Length: 307
Length: 319
Image 1 (spheres, each protein chain N blue to C red):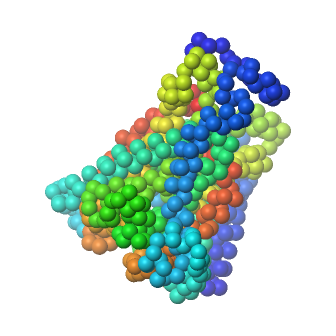
Image 2: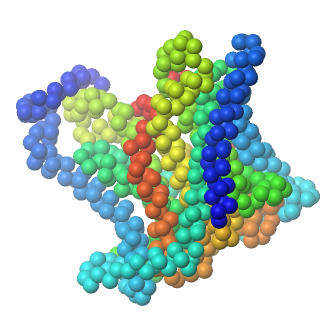
């Protein structure tokens, strides 16, 4: 690259836009027009991406015979025949209310426990030196991609042997084990990117590693902890396989994914109920995601992407 | 019911309390030993809970699965490599492997390409965060719910099936999207790509932000157009990020289960390794064969695992 570095235009230079190298960055109208292909392409992609979700949302508020006879797109023109009856039915007769509570029982401990366990290990990997540290951490990096499938049967046999299969304890333990490699990896990278001087001066002041961990490492790593919490929450909430195996499908314990998967089997043609059920299961992850999304990118990447 | 709330409360307050108490108490205990042994013992105390979980729930079971794959359906007798012979000699094996290959190629291609395209486009507009949130939204949806959403899109009658209605407007008759292979596999792949493109986009977009604008301006000053700038400057600089995203997607493609299970249950030739394992485990109750399928899956992932480790070491060397 032979070109000289272009000096950054000062904010006030916006008035003299004509002097700047790119004609397109001139007046807002030309700029908008020159970007038209970008806007068209991006907006088109976004609209296509939203169609399935919108279809589901609209259908979930339509009457049963409307859903089976006409498309969801006909509902957006008058007469507006919307009803909340589908939601009422799935929450009461299809046991979805109970399943929602079960999902919470599964998800909250299965999110909190692995993050706590991982945080201490990640701190040890990042800021303590001990023989075998690198080899052990490479093992964790390797375990990141080990398919769950290769662990399922022995764990099932173990749980049956301990007589805890089909209990919440079993699924909490399983999710903690499966979630740990990613949690340790993410937190270790984030902790590792914190400034060394911060810890050194704390140690000089006589702080113990416990104090440094709770007073320095944790508070400065809120984005990473939040990102991890979102990830683990969504992963556990949306999981079908592990819930199916270690918790089972009986109504008193089945989480939403299992109940809805069973509904697909038993009432495959009752689209109006399935759409409402699907939306019930999506509601909480969407709230969690949108309320915590500002932490998301910062947390996952934690200074590891340097371009 | 009450009982359960009590249990949940105990777990939610108790477990963190126990873990914190463990760390604080071991630190107290460490004061009793000589200062230089303290620093040698402490890391192991901090690692102990995590390492025990990982050993019990990942390392031990993986080793045990390899052993089980050489045993019969009830894990009682050793039968050598019979399971492997039966798997590869069986009727479904080739189909399952071809499907996983289709997933690896097309799922990865779709998610990475669209993720990159959207990241690049969104980088140039003011409503970037809104556009990105919309694309990322499906990530919050379970595969079970996504399966319902997409069955709805692929519905047969043109009156209710979105896709058939859409092609109807250009004069093509309704199609059976989920019955004939390979079309049905492609349709499930498209549904999965709809979910995971957002993930690729987020990571790639962050990589994109890390590229210095001065470098891009310099290329443009030299007379490069937008496409040349993208392919000659942006893409090479983004290569490490693309590699991360691509390997993540390949691993996902190998492990895919839920969506296939919900949309076709592996019928109509759409079966994949993970779903095959599930049916061996539950429908046929053949643990030996299920373990064999798991080991095959693991074997396919090992090269990617080694690549991951190598890449990680290189990255650490730069640090």
